[in-house]
Amino acid sequence: MKISANLATILAAVFAIVCLGFVITGFTSLDGITDPLQLSDAKGYTWFWAFLAGVGVVFGVLSWWIGHTAGRDE
Image 1 (tube, rainbow, N blue to C red):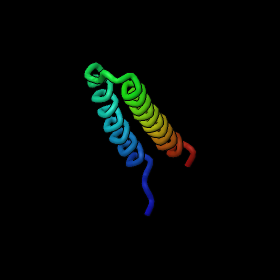
Image 2 (cartoon, rainbow, N blue to C red; image 1 turned 180 degrees about the vertical axis):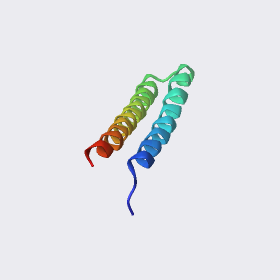
Image 3 (cartoon, rainbow, N blue to C red; image 1 turned 135 degrees about the horizontal axis):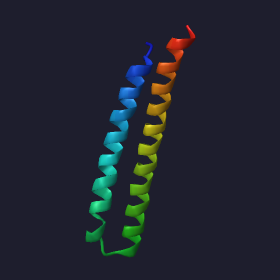
Image 4 (tube, rainbow, N blue to C red; image 1 turned 45 degrees about the horizontal axis):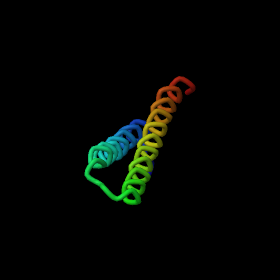
C-alpha cells in the first residue's frame, strides 16, 4: 500500500495535534502535583510528547515539501 505525500502530510498533522493535546494537558496539570519526584517525571513525559509533536511537524513539512517538489521534476 502506497501513501501519497498529501496523505502523509495530513497524517503527520493529525499526529502532531494529538501529541500537542497531551502536551497542553500535561503542562496545565503540573500545578496539582506536590511530590517533587512525580513532578519531575510528569515534566519529563510532557517534554517527550512535545518532542513527538516536533517529530510530527518535521515529517509533515518534509512530506509537504516532497509532494510539492516531486511534481516539478517529472
